[in-house]
Image 1 (cartoon, one colour):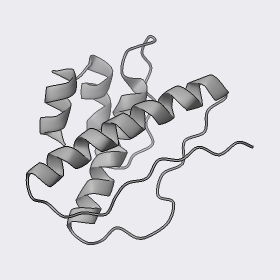
Image 2 (cartoon, rainbow, N blue to C red; image 1 turned 180 degrees about the horizontal axis):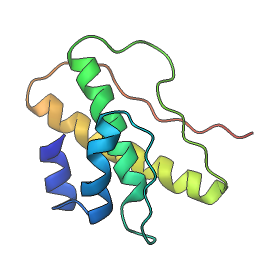
Image 3 (cartoon, helix red, strand yellow; image 1 turned 180 degrees about the vertical axis):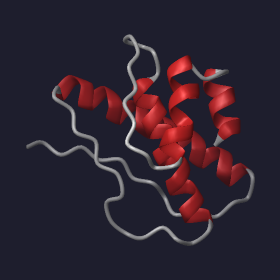
Image 4 (cartoon, rainbow, N blue to C red; image 1 turned 90 degrees about the vertical axis):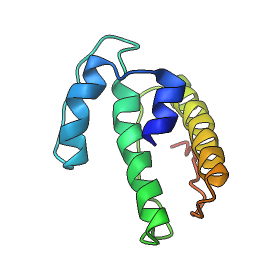
Length: 111
């Protein structure tokens, strides 16, 4: 995962670097940063990392694992697109390394 992150983004933003330790410990975490400061990626990177780790260790259960609620449909669509691209890139990297894992699916539900 770190290899993918570095190839795609370079170095973490301050919000990511400061938020990741608490998120990795599964603590409730508030991340405040300006638009484009890496807040959304902070949480999704940790979530995807855990999903990939669980899958590689054969501990990933079927079903919904992560839920993200958004107040705006346009934001939800953007996040879905970004997640699909990220998951595809990570999947390609893992396949290139010969690693076997369950596919991570991204979905969007209208309420």
